[in-house]
View (cartoon, one colour):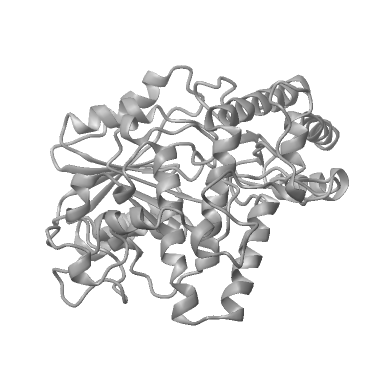
Length: 433
């Protein structure tokens, strides 16, 4: 595939030059929607900004940006988060705008909104905007890499046995189709040192290993891999490394350029607390030409050689939810206003409070206690077959919505308060001791 053709010659409206011409975005192009602007900090619910970070009201002011009531508190960010209410309102307003005038004339502005959103997301991740595709979710993004990388019969893909099915079973399905091999790595159930995790993967590398597919934070154990060190070891052997970041985008301050991954995926509906059906696919620039897209739709071009600029070729998906893609930019602005480092520190604080409280109840954790080996995903051991009933009762009797994944899974994030955490601890203690 050629990367030399200009986007203008292909009729693509997503070039860097055209983006710069429209950098005013909604401020200049959507005067009918004056309350929505991606060119300045987004306004949280009711037009109120967050409290001063130095004040004792700061995290309560963050919690106030979400619509859930206190009797049904979400604590399962590993699966689905509520959106910031201003994001929900943005989606509703922009959807209404499209429904009131679905002409090409009116919808033209959404191309500009998409490019502004892409730039905001790329800047947060410390990568170039041409390396970022905004797809529909982590599952789609993982499968683009799975189906797009060229592999030969007998080539080997090493995966973590705790990967999500779209980064696990998907590789096995490909192996069944094309004769590649999959080697699964089991890591220590209770690691005490990050090097144990690095060694488990390095020991699995062989002469035919071409790809290493990881999950940065496990959704079934809560273990956080030292991915930067694992990536460096793999690259020293010429191995392509793909990282599923579904449990880290929006939960950690990420620098993908420093991390070194060849590709990285995530979903906006989890820890990022953004719109539904918007996902992230990052592909390092030198890898973009070697990955074939999974879907070809209008916007691709007129022949096999005509691919859009950079990672945008992975967005050739047909009609998209333009309102959701634009609202992702509002989400990015909110993360910028809070600060990714502050978000990461707050999740660490809440998760440690939760784990220590669970342990103080005499309950056993699946997830490592150390924040060096875990982050926001916290799993408590449950008697065999009882995780579902305990999780259900935690919701119905204590108003805490978790999950039965690997035990009883609770994943607090920035809309949770310490009172929520204490209620979860008390509930687990009452139900399991």
